[in-house]
Image (tube, rainbow, N blue to C red):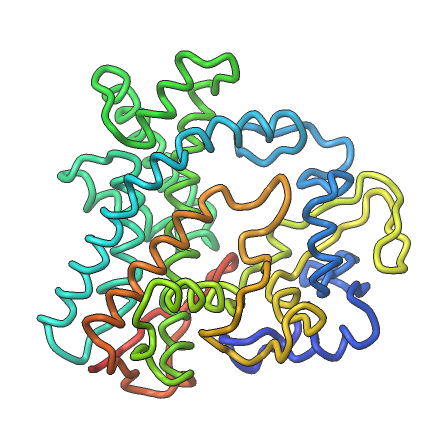
Amino acid sequence: MPFDRPSPLDPPAAYTELRLDSPVVRTITASGQPAWVVIGADAAQRVLSDRRFGILRPGASADTESLLCDGDDHARLRRVISRGLSARALDGLRLRVEHLASEFVSDVKRGGPPADLVASLSRPLTLAVITEMLGVPVDDRERFYTWAEAVSVLIADPERHAATWDEIIEFLSGLVTAKRANPGDDLLSALVAVRDSDDDRLNDRELLLAAASLLSGGQLTTANSLSIGVIKLIQAGGLGGLGDHQAVASAVEEILRHQAGISGEAFPRWAHEDLQLAGHTIAAGDMVIVRIEAANRDPARFPDPDRFDPARVPKPHLRFGHGPHRCVGAAVARMEIAAAVAALANQMPGLAMTSTSEDIPWTDHPLDSGPATLLVAW
């Protein structure tokens, strides 16, 4: 690993070839470690849901300082954060997200073609949503945007990444103090309330890291999903056929299923006991890498899996993971992508790229690569 990837829009062809023999493959990672790579949908779902596979190596202590933990510690943190993302809170957020998406698309349209959809829609929309969710004051949002962009591109520069992260934590610490004194109708205020009153409470450091993680995790991958989704929709015939809620919802699931480029090696699982997986003996201590992009192209679950079909009847995909570590912000990501796609279909049904997909520059992010720019006309 990594296997050759001729197109950033698609998984390596090696997955299709290897899957003919087995949904689980023994390989060597880019760092030289032996590992099992899971490329079949059923096997991937099992690994992600089976608590015998952990985020931590066997014997490692839970590190709640980084929010990377298993078992009771992880369940506690997830339970508290999920309360701030309740169905009631999401219902209240939906109309605001749809309004923001419509406004951003209107601004793009007023500016005239060509426009960079990454800079004018994908990134600003996802950042606007997360800052509103956290209750970041309007005057501070520009600084927050700068930090979020820096965190997403500086991960390969540990010193600068750490310095930026420290600045974010310091800012959030002051914001938590303000929310504690004057709570609002936002996610951070809800988390502060849980921190101060619930038996399952977070400590202050966990609270800050949870908010910072929502910022970094909720921006990069969702922005990439939206940009890639627009490319896929244009290639599949355009946005003109997305005239109702159900059509948009189906298209969003196909966009999510097709997104490629997430690095399973960044967050591997570790076997905590000997077990059998797809006919292979996985030993305690073995590294297991689930390749979501490969599992989501498994023909055993998705007929003609490489074809992008916005009208495909959705089947359960693994874009947000599965089991105890499933992405807690999945509903928000779906909401943002759907709102943006609907706004584009309504206001710019003739949207087209100004170049071929081969000419689109891509970011070189180790966790989730996406278009650096996406020039469009209408």
